Image (cartoon, rainbow over all chains, first blue to last red; front, top):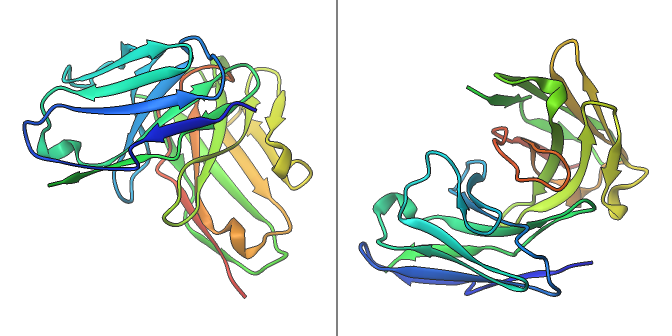
Length: 107
Length: 118
């Protein structure tokens, strides 16, 4: 099975910072990758799909890149609403696999 | 707008069963699949399986095969997931999400907390 590994597990940053979260796949997955944001007590929310496509309604400060085995989620200028946990997810015709999550905290 | 509304929290004893519902609205139910994901307290997201609303095909994660059943009711646009022989480590929030196998998951239901305790 394909494994997804995110780094870092926790990230401390300040309002206005540019932050990047990395997700690595144990084997090539093409561009079959999504990113989700989850706030405490809430369901995950889709941000990015197909590695770099921004979901409708998601602010443009969020962007995704990568293909194959290495992917990144970048937030260009952190806003107060962005402090949350972020998950990458690989999807294919056989399985969904989530990364372990990255908690973005206020510094 | 597209919405998935899940049933309320449940408390069950070990060995019991639970059936969680996911009522959908705002889209053509049979055009998409429904995926189920769970999240144990303080932990990450775990995919459990998927059902095609169109033809009822299912795919379950191996560890849940034989203990989990996913179904749909096209008359009420509702998906269901039953978990049998509950254990304490099944305590989690269970989410449904719209999405065919191999596609993005969007949107998600609000989640259903299932607590398994003697």
